[in-house]
Length: 333
Ligand SMILES: [Mn+2]
Image (cartoon, rainbow, N blue to C red; front, side):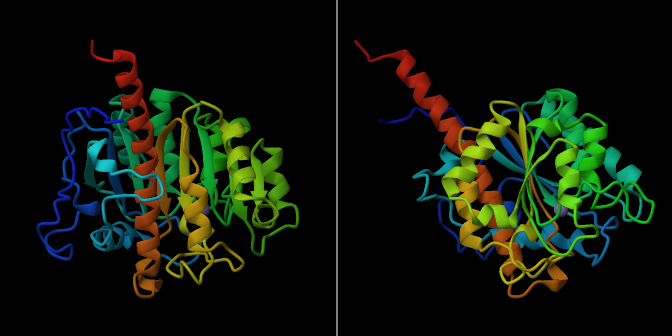
């Protein structure tokens, strides 16, 4: 069936008329603009890393991801879709975040995300350490109410504090829950592993209301049963997918701040994300990319690819709406 496409306002140049390594790199060469009118999805750089508990340097994540993203080609064979024929997409640029000043940083993210959410545009954040996700959720929840979180991560990030401090990259989801910007009872955490502080740290997260599927649990499940569990948990509620690149094994994503062994392959991560169709996503992010520890752009390519898969999930949903609209309009007499 031929899908009638809405007239798209913004899209990358996918003509292939110039080599991909030429030109100035926004994410996949999306047009750089803060305009939201007529936009479906915008990629936002969140270069902040001073709430990281171990290695710092993720402030350079967004620029590393943009650089390698020029390598990505537009079409997706898995979904059999050319996403930019269905979605109007932009690169919002980086927000001007201040190293060491998380309150100002959070305010800037929150204000921009509130505006993006109110415009019905789906933001895809590029981190930055994981502390920034709290501010993204604060901004979006102003429009959507408490959001269901789908978190791919080696860590729970639901600790109460680090060294007595409440705002760190290990505590955002405890704060988000306390502030009622997420609903832990429809949220799910996937991939937790590694050495922890207390043997029952994962139980702590469950006690707060989150469903937690540890890395060991994931290994005992099929892709289908994991994806069904995620979809059952969030239902049709507004959902935000936060993807900490340390979900992957350090062999696949060495460029990160708190690596944990025994993680997932790039093929496994792709398979999980690609099956998350039919979810009411209101935002996404990929965080904790730390280029100074990266090797051969491995980690930033993986991050760029996950962002591309998020874009495709939105495009698949948009195509569904376009097909339904075509069917409703009926055959021409
Ligand atoms: Mn994290």
